[in-house]
Length: 133
Image: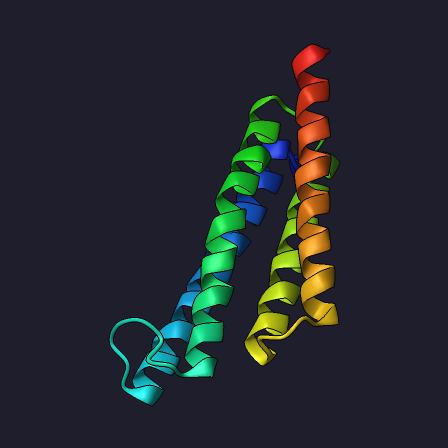
């Protein structure tokens, strides 16, 4: 069996994040159907939270996945790609679950955003390292 490359690692995390975005989108659709709301949130708290969980993920995930992809392009260690992808994925899942449960501040949301920011910081530092070495 061939060794796992940074490209393989990136493919894993991009694929998982696409599935996550699809699931979050489907949760919005489910709430829209349940409450008969075609546009906006209709003042329904559950729908508003589902919309924000999806929206927040779409605000953070694309830029981070660009970082994952560029790490693969510069042939960074697969471990670096996996660490970035894992931090981001777990962070986004925790944030999405926390936000879906309550619109209030929560431990899951706080851990999720912290992990997301750690993924950003780690990817940024790794990319700058590969840019100058």
